[in-house]
Amino acid sequence: WLERTRWPTIFKGSRRDILKAMNQLPRRYVDRLSRSDYNISQGPAEGNPSITSSWDDERKLACIVGAIDRMFDRCENTVQHISRFLLCWLLSTYPQFCHTRPFSLVAKTSTKVRYRYLWK
Image 1 (tube, rainbow, N blue to C red):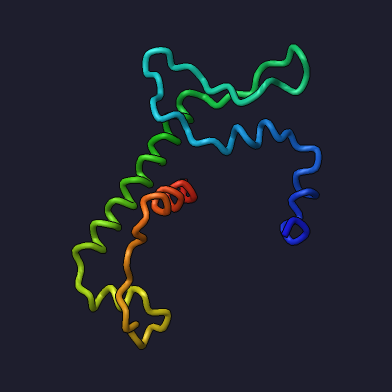
Image 2: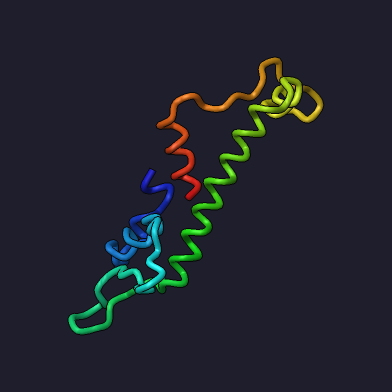
């Protein structure tokens, strides 16, 4: 798998602490009063300024994450209120045939949480 993705080659020499910090979800609560930036990592050398994400960028990212949650909520609500016939078409992989079983949502809460996290 690592050979196929070539990640060791692509990320060779990269600062993993920065990659890890940039992969974190934005803070849920962006402090409106202090407007403090998010400290990603120390600069490349001692005494260099820290690498940060601006308060404004963090606020935008938090809005996007919230929108993703609302999108999934809306999709789940739609699936719960449309006809079985349309759900069969939704599950079908062929445009000319509908599936015999209807599309259904995942039942486990932990799976829903993982799907949402993957999108974020």
